[in-house]
Image 1 (cartoon, rainbow, N blue to C red):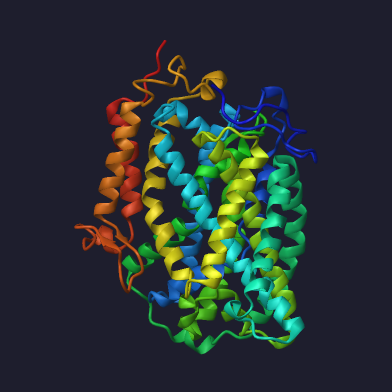
Image 2 (cartoon, rainbow, N blue to C red):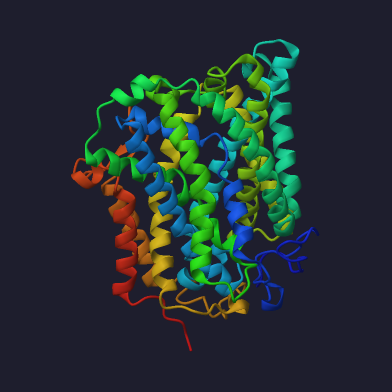
Length: 481
């Protein structure tokens, strides 16, 4: 039967509590416009995590100008994919992983949904940890003490709790509140980021920037893959979660443009700035605490506005991630009201942040390895789902929430064999070309990772092609009449 909760929302721009779970939004209540999504994606990508991504590109050998090219193609291109997948949300009015039941079957969809949830929780844990570092730095500046988290466990846990509570407040209230907050908060924290960015530019070693030797074209291709995997690919599964309130009259091209431009503008600027900073100090890419590493580049009196901007940007990203994770948790089968699912996900990230701040020695390097590993199964889902979108124009709203044997999307034992097979084969093939884990000590190296495709980070592209092509060759999902 249906999972999640029933109810209505005040609309895409309303301020009331959203009581709807994963059930499709009735057509009469879909009044959203692409401009709303532009601000949602913009706000979700003005966090300082873009700076270490840019630093990673320079540390791998790229010049600043090559890093900018990688940022444009990787970030804008991957978020164009996010926008394309969000078209399904406009068509079906349901979250992305709920719509995915029509493709994979009620049980076959569990695998992709679980991967998506792990990915979301991973992003949220990193957002929470980084923001708590920023808040801890603020507190210790006022108190005049050391900013080391392990020296102040109680204060550290309090900082984590503040961030999590701020996240739950917005993500818990739902779609209408989230859209409104993301739009107006973007102006505030975006302005702070511009001021801070201006001071960071003053620290750039321009001699190092202009004298760096360009890397081979293959390294640029690999950089594009790193950016795509670290930005848009991680958000694809969440795209329909936000577009499900879009009016049926909204053009598909407008949805693509709103995501590509909304996320692309801040990401290109931040990644480019990160590459400029790393040109003179490549160690920025390996910083265990990127907040502190970047703060040390600023005048002492700029620390407070910088830390406020860092905290706010990460909060805006986390709002969207936790909101999406709540819907994904409901799709996985947890039968509670949506707001409770949000709280469950926030609790997981709260505990994860405590581990990274008080137990682990660092978190950014494992994080990059983590998202790189999940890019393969996530991209396999995108390939199958995108191929299915080419032939499917309608999703049965009742069948999407009917996970019983009588449901239209039960297929064979709850699994659509063509979609599930294409997804699984694509994952296996993708990992053959992938190197998973930190570059200094990989967790796994595929037997084809040494080929040109593998060495240039194109495992995720191969995964997409195999998933989409395999699904197409197998004939796609075949629904019973």
